[in-house]
Length: 262
Picture 1: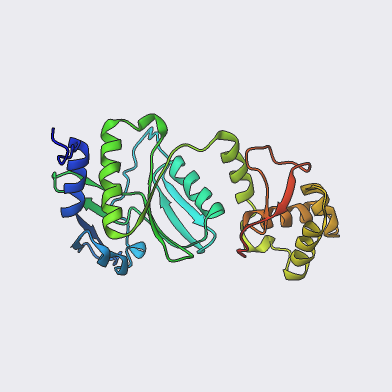
Picture 2: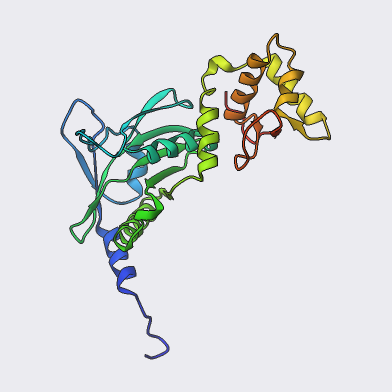
């Protein structure tokens, strides 16, 4: 091979070709079966695919192994479809960790030039305007075929201008902690602006570590159950932060959060 020749892997070449000629199909009207189709490109950023209807409906049958349903996405006050418990856990984590203003389940079909196709799991619009496509897959199912499909999907996202993320299994303790905190995501658990501001000032002004129990007691509510619920809600909305890799209890260290959703 001469110095000015370049080596290309078959996977890279197939991926590049697929992204260059891929088409995307979607439907914005949930009452209609008609779909819209367009070549993958930056123009799709203006097509509001994050409002699209799901492109498929998972069947239900006896002894079904996966659990379908709806997750209440607290940031946008909408129920979002999921086709598995892992998808539900992923939605819960996105609801907790990210600032998202719109999200759609199975919003499109991507048809690649090699006659294969793929339906990504979610398309979300983040608060900074970034649109991100999410695929959810257990680590145990990440075989060569899936990796190849996701590689082609990533290339399409790069062509359009979407971000792309693959979400695998959550650590069991993280998942349990998020499941617990999600019990307090409803706005009814918010203690009110004066009480929340007082607590945040207390946490910020204290040089020593503050625990959930101490934060709850500092609120001066009649019952600790009421106070803890408020602290958990403020953790959920990002006003306070904890280490999700450790079991949550009254001795959990709490600090000021990076976000301030309400």
